[in-house]
Image 1 (cartoon, helix red, strand yellow):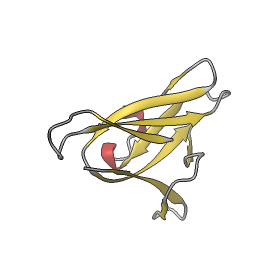
Image 2: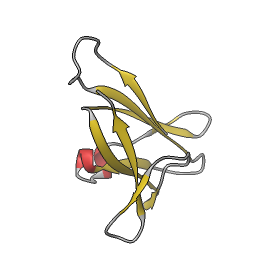
Image 3: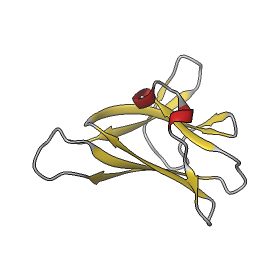
Length: 100
């Protein structure tokens, strides 16, 4: 899940905190890869809470970003309905749009 939180009040070009969440209580490791980190998922590991939800928050500038979760070495899409676009590997990438 990607949830937007505004982090500044005065400008339209500020970074916004976007929360990403993936439910995987049995997973050993969940990471987030996307165009914001050159698909290097290890740069954005998620932390697991007691309920089995893995979470992280990123500050992103306004724009459209493609992303996927790397769950124990296998790419997965978001679990809730989100916009998806085809990728070069024959699967789909999720899209989050950060507003101004």
